[in-house]
Length: 96
Figure 1 (cartoon, rainbow, N blue to C red):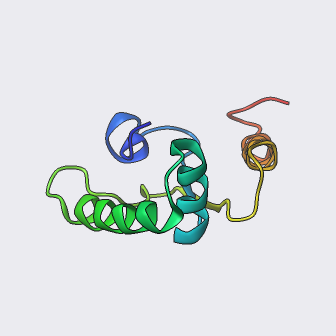
Figure 2 (tube, one colour):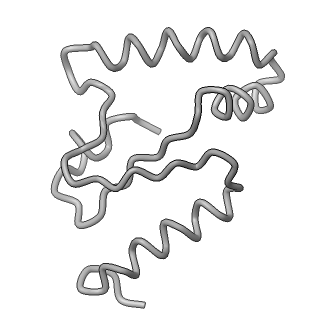
């Protein structure tokens, strides 16, 4: 998934969510997906985050008006439940 959904692809979305997690949590998840070491993934992730946040075109950042959701320690199901809560709290856009 792209890192510019809320800033470039859908800047006028009714609900924008910027998913985040601690660097260690992100590295743990990615290492599990890739079968790589957490240390290797953490180092590569730091380089990518730095590069992406400094690039000229669509730098890594939360979109204006986005809700930041820290998913550190959350399961996928818990993160989805929180997103559903956020969407439902804006009933004029997202009926229950």
